[in-house]
Image 1 (tube, rainbow, N blue to C red):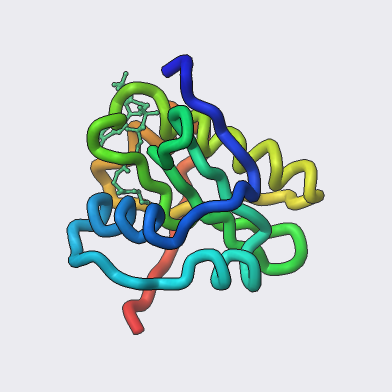
Image 2: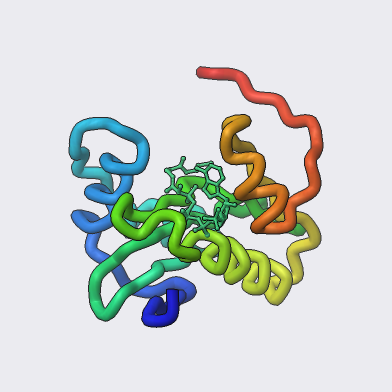
Length: 132
Ligand SMILES: CC(C)(COP(=O)(O)OP(=O)(O)OC[C@H]1O[C@@H](n2cnc3c(N)ncnc32)[C@H](O)[C@@H]1OP(=O)(O)O)[C@@H](O)C(=O)NCCC(=O)NCCS
């Protein structure tokens, strides 16, 4: 989509991210303090904006070294499959490379393999997860 801007470490309202998250992951609206969380722990994040409205968001967690991790990639339902998600992830890769990271990780459910492996250029690799 042409009128979308992708902003690295852009200021955002917690409410806007909480609304996106509730819609993206099908849960009730929460009051999480995303701003404090990502500023304290993340390499950065990307806000995808159409005019002023937040239509996409992704958090890039970091080990402090060469590994960065895509978390909570989300695009508002009304804007999905319009080409917002892939450039948002591409921006994360550009910024992580610039920060001297050597690896960008993501894990995802099987149905999103075309998005991450084809549209975003990730290689398939085994990964593990424990629900805590
Ligand atoms: C995953 C997500 C961020 C993708 O964002 P998006 O803006 O729709 O992605 P894009 O429009 O850039 O998609 C580019 C291509 O990736 C593939 N793709 C995207 N979403 C897909 C899906 N749900 N299933 C299969 N392929 C998909 C398609 O090939 C698509 O191209 P096409 O629309 O021309 O067919 C979005 O679907 C989302 O917010 N989902 C809910 C939250 C979530 O599950 N996040 C992932 C956590 S790991």
